[in-house]
Length: 208
Ligand code: FES
Image (cartoon, rainbow, N blue to C red):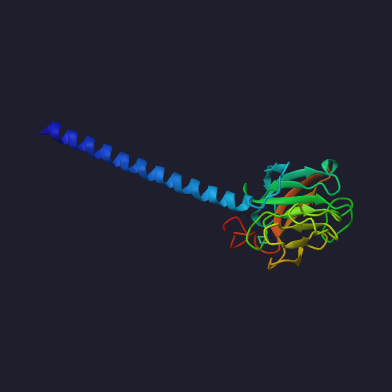
């Protein structure tokens, strides 16, 4: 009788263990599938990125609870050579670029450094930076009249010299600005996001 109870108890534990394992495996599969689909959608229009950095997150916080993340240094930048970095989350790409001319809200000694979310506000494709006079790979008939972001999915154009305002295309509003801070050593930090919500974040914050 005692042996039977032991056997039943062991069998019960074994059964529960199998069920727990199967639930865990199912949850991991779902998470992996969702992550994979999201990556595929974003990469459909993504330009080749030679520099994609997650930056170095400081223990200090930025504005409104955003992290403070080291993105680049003044000495590492060249005019019209964009740097791609993820912020505020590890899978949210942005473009930082030194434009070579002073612009509204530009930072650095020449007020010519800006950074914006790279996720197009139309349907979430990744757009690419185009310097004045250059053409997107997907549209050789288009020549940028100034520094812009050009989305090859449906042709939205963002004005990098004017707060990423939409110049043309179906995007309903500008991409969010990455708030930058430059310290006395010339280190450039991302310290927040401003403007409209980051695409896919209903509240534009880390809770979305
Ligand atoms: S997703 Fe960028 S224009 Fe449609």
